[in-house]
Image 1 (cartoon, rainbow, N blue to C red):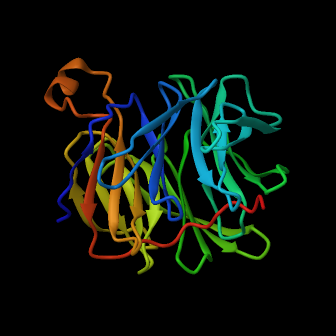
Image 2 (image 1 turned 60 degrees about the vertical axis):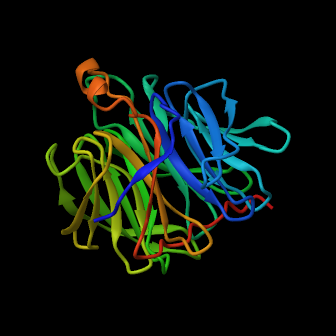
Image 3 (image 1 turned 180 degrees about the vertical axis):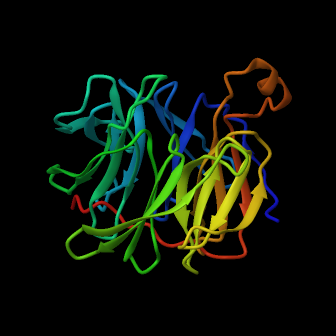
Length: 292
C-alpha cells in the first residue's frame, strides 16, 4: 500500500488540479471554493498563493512558462512570475448554471477542459472542449456528463480516459495525438460510493489509470478495461486528484476537499490539505500547452 503523509496543511475548500512543473520544480494546484492558484515545493516550502477573480476549475502548464487557466466559463493565461492574468477566450453556448471544471494538457499540445452543471440537482449537460495555443476553442463532446472530470492520457498518448463524478463512470477513448481527434468511446467502469466516485485522474508509465475515489477516501489504480487492481487508503475522506511529481515522476501528491458535514470534518481536520507518497511506478509525462 502507498503510505501518504501530510505535505502541507493548506486546508483548501476544494483543492484540485495538481500539476508538476519540472522546470520550476514546484507543484501548482488550485482551490475552487476560495478561488486561487497555489504553488509549493515537494518539501513543503515556498508555498505561494495567487487569488483569482472567478471560480477556477483547473490549470495546465504552457511551453512559455505561463499557465493556462479554466475560469468559470472562460480560458485565461496566468504568468506566475509577474502575477498577470489575461482572458484568452470565452466558452460559447454553455448553460447559465454551468462552469468549467477539470482540465489537462493533452499529447496534441492543446488544453482539454470539461464543463459541469453546478446546481445541486444536476442534468446531463456537461461538455468537453479543446483549446489550442492560440485560444481557439472547439467543442469536441456535447452533453455527455453531469460533472466532467478525470482527464488523463496513456503514456503513448493514444488513449484518453474521461470520468463523470456524478455518473459515476469512467470512459475510454482512442486518441490521435497528431490531430487531437477522439474515436471509439467505451464505458469501462461504473463505480459507486463505496469504491469511490471518480474525481481527478492520472496515468502511469505501465498503462494504468489512477482515479481519486472522492466518496471513499481511496486512490484506485485501474486497468484500461476498468478493473480496479489496487485501492489505496488516503488520510482524508475526500481526495480529489493525484499528480506524479519529481524528476523521476515517482512521487505522488494528492489534493483533497473539506467535507460539508461538520462531524466528518471534525474527524478529519486536515481535509483540504496536500498529501504525498512515494510511488513504485512512474507516472506518464503530461505535455505542455503549445502557447509558444
